[in-house]
Amino acid sequence: MRSRVLLYRQDELCKLETKLLRLDEADNKESEESRKALRSRKHDEGRDSLRKTLIQQIDDKMKQYDDMVNRIQIYVTLKAPSSRNFKSFRTWIFNEKPLTREESGFLNHRDDFVALSDERECSWLDGVVEDVLERCLPRLVMDILFTSPEQRLKTDDPKYVQLRSKHRIDVLVRLILTMMTVGLLVGPSAVLFLVSGHSALKIGLIMIFTLLFSLALGVGTKAKRHEMVAATAT
Image 1 (cartoon, rainbow, N blue to C red):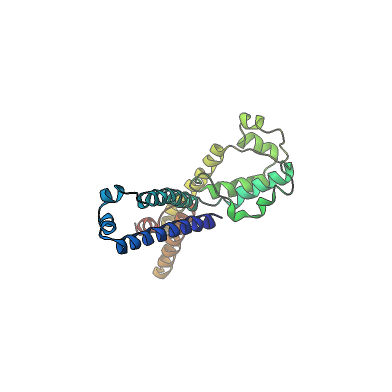
Image 2: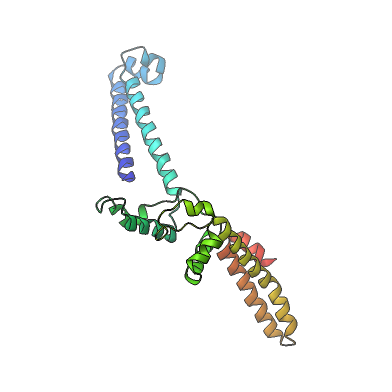
């Protein structure tokens, strides 16, 4: 839809440009007075010129065109929502039925959805941890550990709507990441200390732990490529 509007505005500009070029060509062939108007804006405005009106029309259309380009540029920078967030939203719509079937057809076009805010670092890991806890722990335990009293008051339908504290989940995820980091840093030293001789085996273990560290860095953070290379090298 945005592409069609953009092409429509572009075609309008092309037509106005064609009119301007034809007007310039006609003035260039008409007389010396008309040719002088092409070289002097003051001289052109001194007569009953259509060029000034046409330039104003082009300027107005270009403002509309540039505004559309800026809006598209902002839109394409928006990221798609995570699968987990989209599924939660769609499930709530299907269960609560706040819309008719005809008006909820937009849910079938997932590519049209965008996230209005950037996800936090490791937000996918927060979701994985929360899903695992939901499957492994009873709901009462989850409500006590990961739901604040204020969040319990925000929903009157605990069957379909369950609010969890992002802060508490984040604390648990940070604890898990800290343990993983310590394990990846201390683990190689401990293993190499226990393995005596076998230089080839030690080199292999170093390569494995280096790969695991690089993998954890790439999966658990938003580090750029050069940052990953530098961290792995050091």
